Amino acid sequence: MTIQRHRPFGQNYAFVVVAVVFLALLASAGMRATPGVLMLPLGRAFGWSRDSISSAAAVGILLYGLMGPFAAALMQRFGIRRVLVVALLVMTLAAASSAAMTQPWHLLLSWGVLSGAGTGCVAVVMGATVVGRWFSSHRGLMMGLLTASTATGTLIFLPGLAAIAEYAGWRWVVLTIAALCAALVPLVLWLLPERPSDVGLTRYGATSDEPAEAGAPSGNLFALTLGALHRASKHGVFWLLFATFFVCGFTTNGLIGTHFIALCGDHGIPEVRAAGLLAMMGIFDLFGTTASGWLTDRIDPRKLLFVYYGLRGLSLMYLPYSDFSLYSLSLFGVFYGLDWIATVPPTLRLTTEAFGERDAPVVFGWVVAGHQVGAAVAAFMAGVLRVQLGSYLTPFVIAGATGVVAAFLALRIQRRGNDAPMVLSNEAA
Image (tube, rainbow, N blue to C red; front, side, top):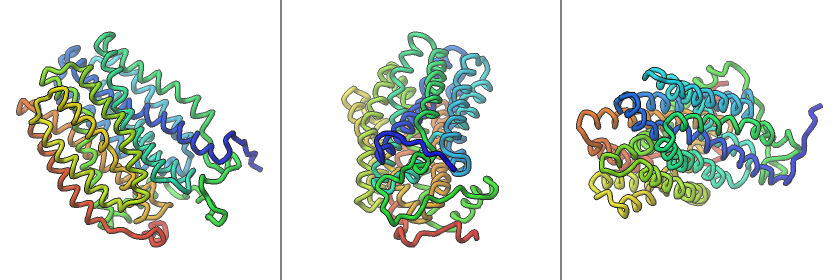
């Protein structure tokens, strides 16, 4: 018989689980933000061009996205805690080993391949899996909070990391990230049970007639993951979700997250000050994305996506034509922070409605892969166009246009009630 280890706070222990995962997502997001801080210091230290550094960042972003659906399957098979611990150890190795890099391929291996693989397991897909496993009610709000951490961590770490790079050198930046990831491993082992039933609990807000938790899927993990993609790809709603989330990544992590500090540097703004503006975006993102989760429980998510993408696109077109004063950049930072990744809760809800709770984590993982493909394309494209054209004007206008297109694509997503999803597993059977 399984011995259940009871935890304090009763059913409210679900919020302790959310807090632990929130911290892990913060650390993962901070690691993904680090290449943006390293771009100028590595250029000065080794003479590497921005497009070569951007290429390594793009590989990391791409692998981060492609790992999502496989990470969801791994968590279903081997458990959230095991996957999270291994991912944190890989992230620690990636950051610590990069302190000794001297060649561009070292950067590609550490901050491209290893970083992408590790952070890809500690991403928004993990948040979706935790929320589905531990919560029966308030899912939109909890998903908004965990989603906010993935963007907030990207931004709030930047001022400190930029200050470390300026005053102590870039090697201390990567060692700081390594120490942070390593410190989270014992916390996860101590405070993160696998399922509510493991500690004598049920999902938060569960009713007495709620069905039991689904067991781990059987079969080959690659077949399950790729099979979910094959079945989902037959439905137009999947491609609309994929396309809009591609634009989300294109306009956030890939463009602003990777190139905003360098853009400000082109206008004479110091790195620490530019990183501070990104940190301000992170603070407002925490409120904006959490509020988006609350709104998703109450408003048609397609309408929310229309507003988010449309206003985001217009703001990106405005930025390169602004005067880059403290006032204009602060105004942009507040608005963009509120909208940074507010798209995730409504996108997850639409995915769950369309494909059902059992298959939604893996299908959503493929949708998130679209997000990171978009981010990788933007990170690479902006670096190349900056070198070729001498400014960031063109990539920002292109990104703004994609935001407007995504706004109208979101309105074309067909909704299905929670009682009639596309149950992919039944189709496979």
